Image: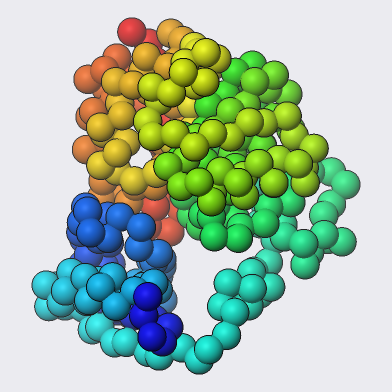
Amino acid sequence: MSQSAVQIIARGPRAVAENAAAAIDANPMLEGATYSILEEDEDRGLWRIDAFPTSDEEAEGLRAVLATYGDLVVTTEELADADWLAMSLSGLPPVRAGRFFVYGAHDRGRAPASTVNLRIEAGAAFGTGHHGTTTGCLMAYDDLLKRERFDRVLDVGCGTGVLAIAAARTGSRVAVGTDIDPVSVRIANENASLNRAKCRFFHASGLDDRRIRAEAPYDLVFANILAPPLVALSQDIKLALRIGGVAVLSGLLRTQERRVTAAYLSRGFRLENRIRRDAWSALVLRRVG
């Protein structure tokens, strides 16, 4: 663990920042790295990566990757000793994504009566609704619900469980999720209880777990992970879905859309929708073969 908390900031043109973010995603040594990418100055075309390493080794790895992109200006700032998670969550506003309203305990009094309100406490898990990937998935799901219903839903890489909880709260009879991180699974199950949602979350790697197979085939599979595992899991996600079922995929940058889409088209999927939030994309694909 790093002796003091630091924030690594990289600024540069959008294409360079997106390529650097893709390189972080592709680096197996940085698989668990926490970072965000956003547009900082539209007039100047300036984009920014903020990374929050949890160890000296991770910090060195992030700096090494970012240093290979000469058009990025990289700085490191030391953070004062504080509960950064609690502070950041207390400053996050609620998120509206279609019919869904995602909020934390600090905003429980602001939930409208006309929305599907999801109280999500992040803890150490990913997926509060503020990241473009989670918002994109919820928006894609909201759009799908205007035309069809999904009885059986699987959330791969569930994080906080927000996507499976959203499914359970909108009528899915079966809503299950998996994550390779046991802490995330615990947090997801706690969030399900908070929302009185009939969900089950399991610690599992991939889709071969017997508890996941027992509920297949699914009508809808969420996978908000990263581009490389999305590609690697394309056949497994296909087999988990019924013909006519839908996969909502995210965790990928716009620059990674073509690679992920091609992997699924080759497996017998049809691209139906694409939602972009900041530098991120969510893809909606239907199994047709």
